[in-house]
Amino acid sequence: MLSERHGDDEVAAWLEAEGVAVRVPGAGREAKLVELALKNARRRGYEEDGAATLARRFGLDRPDRIEGFDVSHARGRAVVGSNVTFLDGSPDKSGYRRKKLDERNDDYGNMRELVRWRAARALAGRDDRSDPDLLCIDGGEGQLDAAREALEETGWDVPLVALAKEEELVVTAEDGPASGASGTSSRAKRSHSIHDWADDDPALHLLQRVRDEAHRFAVQYHQTVRDDVSTPLDEVPGVGPALRKRLLRRFGSVDGVRAATPAELATVDGVGDATADAIDGAL
Image (cartoon, rainbow, N blue to C red):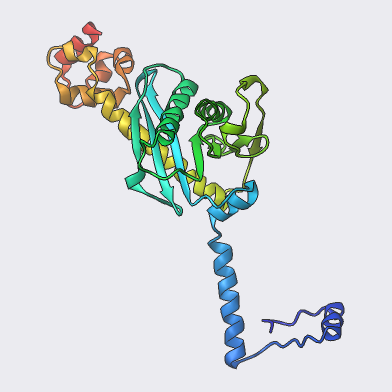
């Protein structure tokens, strides 16, 4: 039963030879069945499953459980990492974790430390979560290699991909999102595959959601840690914890406050001319 006549004489002859009768119902039960089939087909096309698409493209088991990783810091200060969990395409807040990292201005080293921490906890049985089906790293080739090195060092066997922000390119090892456990430990020998998927690709959308949530969670934690860290602003008369927090949020870091002019400092709520001059003189 078809929704309309196909109009192909060769197809009609072949179907007739195979004993297949073709009808285009105009009304009644058969017409309703055709309409239902069309609706189901359109719905499946519109709601294509990102996890199934990832599995098909990369030859993986269906990645129902995906963990995302990102690092946030201010020029090596207040360095933190985020580890978020998505289950069946949706955030699983109970699986979110965060960690303070060593203070250094090294994005690759920070990512290596973060993934190594997660892997070591999993292998030692100190993490109460199930192992993920896929790791999604916020970053490009360098972050992917750092994460792979962490997996190689620990022997944790989990596939991983990276998603770079600027051009939304998916990065994998040359042979796909293989785990670091089976890779080489020499960064110089590494090669990558770059996947440029369409903007409406369901697999890309799934990875973007994981990546963006890992980034949001990392930035949120970084802001909390940064505001709690002692800074030279604590020594400036007239600058209490609340004002220090507003200054850091306005200018991003102590260096940003230091670079601001007294006039710019005075634009922050609670900073008068005298306090602006005191900050400028002290920093």
